[in-house]
Structure formats: C-alpha cells, structure tokens
Image 1 (cartoon, helix red, strand yellow):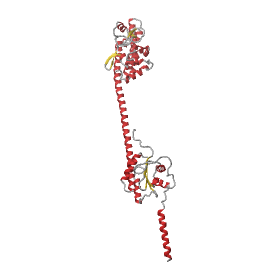
Image 2 (tube, helix red, strand yellow):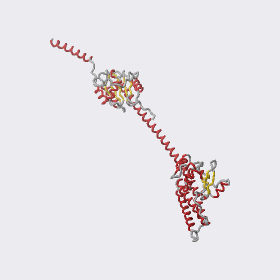
Image 3 (cartoon, rainbow, N blue to C red):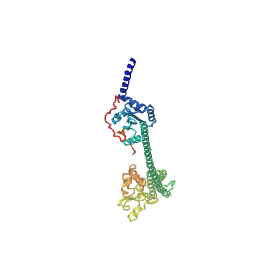
Image 4 (cartoon, rainbow, N blue to C red):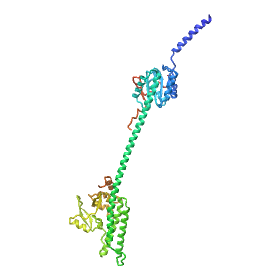
Length: 442
C-alpha cells in the first residue's frame, strides 16, 4: 500500500513537470551562434522560429546551399526578427557578402538583401515565385535558394556579356580610328610622293638647263691666253652645277630643294661673269635672279608687275622680261609641273616654297619674296620670314593638310538591396540604427 501511495504522487509530479516543460517557451539562440552557423554551413534554424524541419530536411537545405556558385545564406528565425534592421545587423556581422535571406518558421514573412546586384523588385519576384511552387518549408527554402542562385548567375553573365560587348564595340571604334588614320596617312604620303616627284622633275630641268648653258660657252680652260679670272669663274660655275645635280639626286623632301636652287643661282651668276670677261665687259653687279624665270640668270633692274588679280609690285627682272613687261606683254614665266599641268612656279603651291627661297637666300630670302609674292600661292609661305624654315614650314604643313594645292551598362544597385514584408511584397526596412541583432539572445 505504501508503494502505491508513493507511486501515484510521483507519476502526477512527472506529468505536471512535463506539461510545464512543454508549455515553457523555447530558449532564444545567441547572436554569435546564428552568425557562426551561417558562416559554417550557410543555413541556421533558430530554436524559437516555430519551424519543424527534420535533421534530414535540414541537411538537404545545407547541401543545396553549399552547392551554389554564389554566396547565399538563409536563416529561419521568429517573425519579430524578420526586419530590415535585423537583416542589416546580421549582414554586417557576416562581412556584407553575397545574399542574405531571413524568414520565419512558417514561411509567411521573408526579407532578403543582396550584394550581388539584385534589386528589390527582383527579390520580390523571386520570393513570390518560390512560395507558389512550394508545399512545405523545406521545398520553399531549396526553391528560394535555387531561384536566387540562378538570378545572381544570370546577372553576372549579363554583366560579363555586356562587358564583352562594350569591349568589342570599343575595339571596333579604335580599329576604325586607326584604320582611318592609317588610310589618311597613306593617302597623304602618296600625294606628297607624287608632288615630290613633280618637283624633282622640274628642278632637274633647271639643273640640266644650267649644264647645257655652261657647255654652250665652249670654253677651253687649257688655253694659256684665257683670262685666269674667267677660268676661275668657269670652274665655280661647273662646281655649282655639280653641287646642284648631287643635291637634286639626294633630295628627299621639298626643303632639300633650297640647296639646289642656291647652287643654281651661284652657277648662273658665275656663268654670266664668264661671258662678261670673255666679251671684255665689266662683270655685272650680283643681283637677285630674274623673278619670272631664274634660268634667265641675274636680274638687271626692278620692274613694276602685277599678277592676275593682284596689285602691282616691284620685282627683279632680266633685260628681256623687263622689255616684255614694259611693252605690256606677259613675261617668260618659269613653268613647272603641278598635278600634270604646267603653271608659273609662284602659283605652284607650297611644295615649291623652298625651291623659290633658295634662289633668293642671298638677297633677303623670304623677306624679299614675301613682298613680291603677296596674293600668290606662295605668298603665305614667306609671311614668317625665311630664317631657318621661316614661314615655309607652317604654310607647307597647312597646304598638305588641305590636299596640297590642288559602358553604358547596368551598374547594378550598388549597396545592400533590401526587400521585406510578406510574400505579397517587400516593405523594406530602413538602414539606420543597429536593429535587434545587436547581441544577446534571440
């Protein structure tokens, strides 16, 4: 009897203790335990979430999360913890990486944020789709994980594709610009080469003419009765001819022609001196070459002349051209090749500027020609004088340039995008303040 009396009270006490134990609330999880769990297996089930997931179901969720190519973490907590502030605090503790999803044990309240470029509208869409395709919490978690992972991968792929498209367009633009520059440079070189060939052809005409005129003197330098001064001048004329010929052969650019015409001017003067000595006349004053045609040799006087459409100016001229101009006739102009046509050298364009300047380098050069050539094609070439390259270089370059005479992508949403509320939509939650994840128990 005593045993029965003792057994019944003990049994009653055990039942009461059990009932009270079941009725007591589950203890909340420590914040650091939640953080540790999410870091180690990307999933955490809080004791007070109200969720019922078997050990195998939990393992299935963990395996799905570990199989992701993106960093996605899911925490199932009590509804009071599914807030924007809570999400923000937990995200900071996790290092603000990847995508973090909080939901209650019944899957009725969800909030998520992503550092991988997903905006609020996309988050809302994914959660709504996951809920519609799931019948229990396990399916919801795995479905939600899969959808987030796919959306993030699509976002990254789109970004990569956009980058490649942008780079492709950029490469095409750069290639196009390089092609245009190359084509323009090639055309310019071809044009300059053709103009240089015409210039060289015309200069060779001057060199050849000087050689023929010297030969026409038919001077016997071995004649003992020959005036030594005439012999010296003849030798200087021959040396000038040789210098002009070599300089023409070696010329690579228009500026090289200055040496040629300077030597030609020397040769013409010394040849004139030889003639004077042979005729017994005084050697004439060394004047600038005949402007109209330097092949005529030194000028004898200045004459007033106006180019077509231009104002009169004083120019040095030989005796023949002086008479022609004074009688109202056109002078015997030195014609050169320009684009397959013959025209006076002063209307030939910038290629002939050094050629013209060389003839007058000893007589004021560009300063002299600048006044004479005002209003002509060569006039602007000498506006800066003929010191060094003078105004020729700028004018020549201008003449050549004018034909020579004749990611805009989707930048993502930036920071940590949050969407919240129930499955009908995410009401957000602010980013200011620490929220209720600051530590302690949940």
